[in-house]
Length: 358
View 1 (cartoon, rainbow, N blue to C red):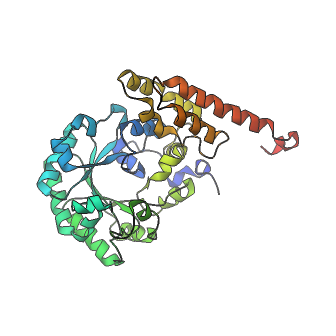
View 2 (view 1 turned 60 degrees about the vertical axis):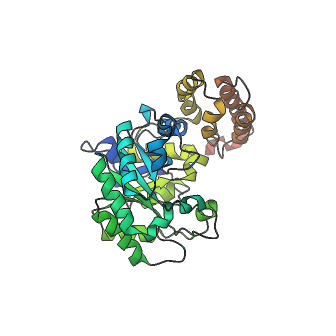
């Protein structure tokens, strides 16, 4: 397949002078992922993708109101544009949490209507809200009324064996009537019984055509497609039909994909993996000085060399050493050195007769 960096950029032009960074970032985003997209992760992703929109882990409205905000809403200024994803189903509480999120500095509030876990269902939020469009609409209206930043919704196509496009569009229409103009569509159903959250990301079939159809029928809405986007060509194809593509696990397991897409879609210079990682050093050292353990930071970079010579060794060095007392940036440099030695050995093994085909 052709590389997206080599495609005609005219079909997906760079940021226009009339667009803010937040508005332009609709094109490329990284999904909110529980236990993954914390502030350490988002800072790293920002280095990889200066123009993408980043999302926090889902935080329940009650936790925002009553919990440790310094920890739950931790955000580095470099992360912008960044959205706070909220969970919940009580309009008044969601409105209060949205107000707090906006005051903290987030650029967007996103309501989770897609998480299928049992714990989330028990709290009457997440994917089960697909069955309650009136409640979602009331929640969105309350949040919009409480803050001055965009309020968006991340949803599924439906729940369980409900494969009715008309019902999906009716959900969108009712929530849009409440004031929501952007929907992130995880283009598969959520099974509330019988499948784990992991299986819910893989087993239900993808129906990108529903997202495409929604955009065609409701062009005034911004539609972002999410789910099963694992390579650059797939992601780029979606831009012809919807407003943006949201990467999930692919951005975590192969972070360099995020960098390639940012360069291809927004412009800029393609940087090496090692260069990008070393750009993370000042942040890492500042966090270490604050008493944060290295393992909590570098777990987000383990996939940076995925598919490359030495990628497994890089991951192994960090995984085995980052949890040890006193682990610091020198461990990262050691992992890079191992990776670079693998790459050197691989290059040295190429027959001289093949160099003309590089």
